[in-house]
Length: 119
Image (cartoon, rainbow, N blue to C red):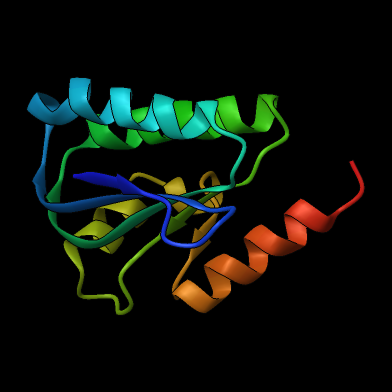
């Protein structure tokens, strides 16, 4: 798990491999740091091979905090229906709750559009 700012104005949190309840304290800490900044937050799940429902709960908390602060929060999910992340995401009914993008181009475009929107 890493947190970076690859381009000015965007905070990226990358998760990879297996993610479960043991990762919650670290995820909460990194997500809190990202949300405390001023940049749009993009959580990259493209490298995740396994994910626990508890991780999604923390992501929902991050979304709620970003919404409270009128900030952008996006999930970058892997493409294709065969991904375990996509399957769990749909089974849990989160596809209507969390804002999802499927490419970096889309993520940057949505973050820029929301940053430019009158608020």
